[in-house]
Length: 297
Length: 269
Figure 1 (cartoon, one colour):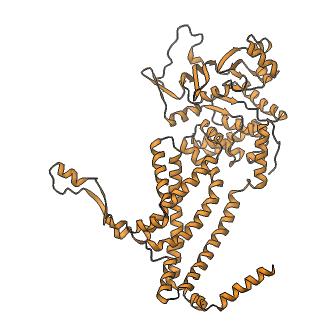
Figure 2: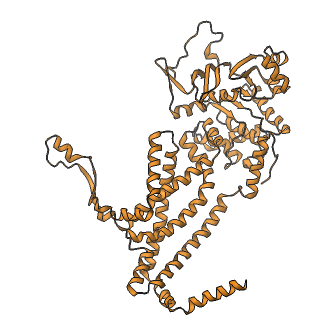
Figure 3: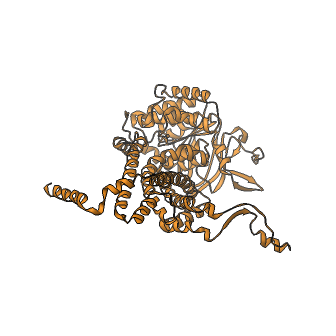
């Protein structure tokens, strides 16, 4: 205890006396409008959108992965393999510079020029619409694409584990009632898988919030860490601004942790420690050919 | 599927259209293990057929073939004149698409050994789920019918209980009500009382007896010899993937002809 107290006192002494922290400068700068805008758009909005897309796409990929169709299964496997194998930072750098590959992205009949030549028409153009990649695939959109696609791969694995955790008897009961695969997934399997899916999804959200700082490498300028880093480099007060970044991320993740606590409590209803023990007991009793009898909630 | 006229057989004892279930030389293998080695079965409407046999005899597997929860490797199964799970074209069988199989299953109710109620739904919601979702019926009508069914199985006061709040016997009775809510013409029971405490077996059997008295066609895989004797119209004894003996339950139980039937009955009686 005494040792801990001394160590804590030494740490506070360091925080207060070391000039390099420059607390007043940090507090003055960390609430400036560009930083708040970066926090709201680049960090909070980006986290929310990337997670929404990531979870939705992740469910689709998980269902594909568990499908009986080998092509769908293969595509899903390839997708998760690629996006889990490439580090997020590298992925973001790639998406940020994808404009180098195509300056314009257009939709229309594929291989139109080549086909035209086949029929003797020079420079045939069958494009329906297009846009400059510099308008779309820079900054926010490139960052969002990188984070969301990568997140979908991780979410797909989480959702797959959740679906597989649901007893096979549930699927059979639903099939015996004449439900189609889509109906039984939506109404029977996924609601039960949620209990397994929610906690790691909370962790993924927190990880995503922190990973928005990687957008520095796209680059996305309207983003918390980009702004703090820029202020630090411009004013040569690098360390105070990094401390500000730590404090901001601590604050934001703490809010999410509270949210996660309540979310887990909600979805764990009736499945608490007592509930789990009860289920285990019933399972064992059923296997032994018996039954624990009337169980009150 | 009206084009699936059943090939006529000269000298067949009953006209096939009179049968609720007809199985012909059903074979089923899991990998290299053959669990069904050519099963024949005929069940008339309103009949209660009991499948008896030691564990691993293939009786549950055969039951699961009747609503195509298991694919069969050879043979044919008709329910109410309709070929199950396959379409016959040019003398060849083609497996049906998932949607068509689902449509066939709607008129076949099934009750499982481990109940398999939906744990995130109340008793009432378990019963109303399929009629609402699959048959797109009106909510008010389904609700009334479901409440009446739960009343009939003696659970009129537990409509809003979750499965985890019900005993095994109560859960199984909800499961029976859930299957009946689809107004099936055939009910399959897969060892419905095997996971129950002895004192809870009676309440489930009572519901099944009531159902049999009402004229429901039932195929029951069971170890309850008493039920087979009292309620069964026919008894099929299976062992090692084949039908060893069949006949009137009272006669077979009182005077089994085959050695294996004798040995089995001696153990369970």
